[in-house]
Length: 222
Image (cartoon, rainbow, N blue to C red; front, top):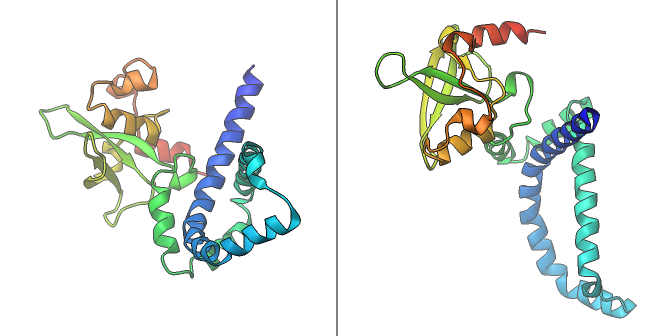
């Protein structure tokens, strides 16, 4: 049973990697395809009529085939993500106006990132009384313009489309291990009705048992 769960997690992680790599390309391609379809739609209908084939009779089958092929494509792209070929393709795509901006915006929601691009759910000193904390996100572990400081984003609740950015010393940032971007989103949308412990299905953790960012970075050094 453990092996099945491990395989499923690995399969899902690669699909997510493939999805977030291919999504910016897909958004740009959609505009081109829309123009192409407008021009070729009548030609396509005439072609199917000419060969005597009616694809509408097999609509469910086409949808199923498309879903299977699309998942396999994402899985394959997920495997290619860390190769030189993918990096070369990405450099070419970055020359397309708007691609990098779209990619960075979509990347915010990608919880499958690894290394220094991994999204961390963290706690920092809060706005309330002493010993209060706010839960926020670190979208990367790249050092700030201020030495030993890192950027933490605190989103608004219940609509997390805005918030505040803080440059916080690494010893004052506590990593909430096991929490993901999706867990933090659930927490924000619930307005605290559901605690983060409840969302993570874990017991509350003592502050001194939380991992500081300094310790996290040391542990993950290559």
